[in-house]
Image (cartoon, rainbow, N blue to C red; front, side, top):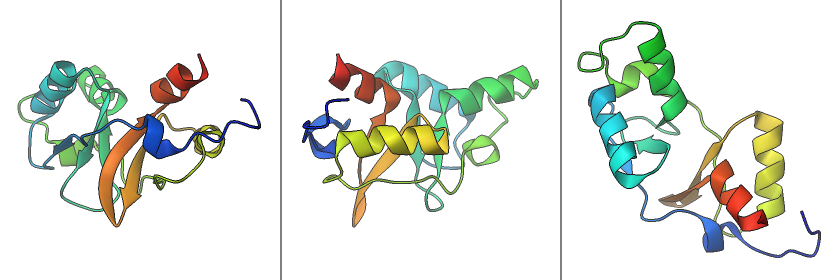
Length: 124
């Protein structure tokens, strides 16, 4: 990444933020992700929780029923977040350090999502 690149998260993040309730089925989560062409949703029940395509694929691979299994049963908890003013190089470092592909963007409340896809698109 160019060390002189001063691009901020707010310029690259995905908005509007897509959310889902923890008591929705993972099938519904998958449907919304497919419809919006995204790979993660912020879970509105609980703090710092998201559900990702990987969470859903893992549940399906384990034999979970997609109608009966709820988002809260498979969601990723205690997710790291970033602020809109953070530099993209810092986001890339955080994703590498924490081994994650999605970081919710928080500015008093959730305002967007930054993904490894967003980082890669920014670099190209």
